[in-house]
Length: 41
Image 1 (cartoon, rainbow, N blue to C red):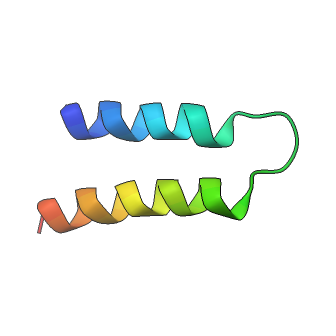
Image 2 (cartoon, rainbow, N blue to C red; image 1 turned 60 degrees about the vertical axis):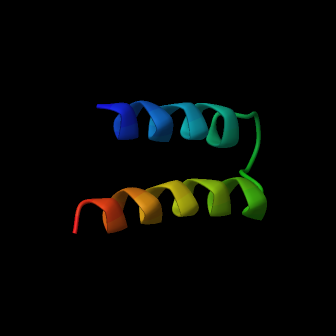
């Protein structure tokens, strides 16, 4: 459950801004997703 909470927090901060998401914000989310994927392999 902690991984899902971390992903939610990163998405909330990075993607829920007004206007288009910055490349840096998208990269932050990708990084968290990648870490979660690797931990579950």
